[in-house]
Image (tube, rainbow, N blue to C red; front, side):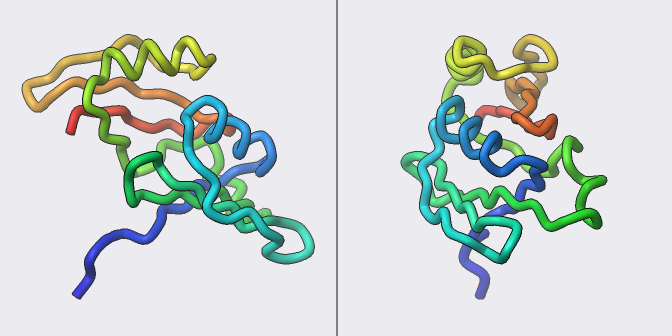
Length: 122
């Protein structure tokens, strides 16, 4: 049976810039950073204190159209307002303020490549 998601892949144009964003601004931890082939690296990161992993990949021209698009997953946080303030202070760009809906609070931010992600309460 399936037990969990091993990792999600985030398409990036510049792996070094994305690595700096995810480690310095979001606080992710490097699990693997090694050559993948002649033109790219396998960069796998872990969300601190969790099992969630993200791979920053650049798979060539056929993936170019995916870079900077909204990703179809959300990051869960205990306190959206606090996390929003912390990330804004680190220079993370948000599309607006924290919003509240009947199902919970959320905010949308962009990574270094322009991809959009949701921060949401658990």
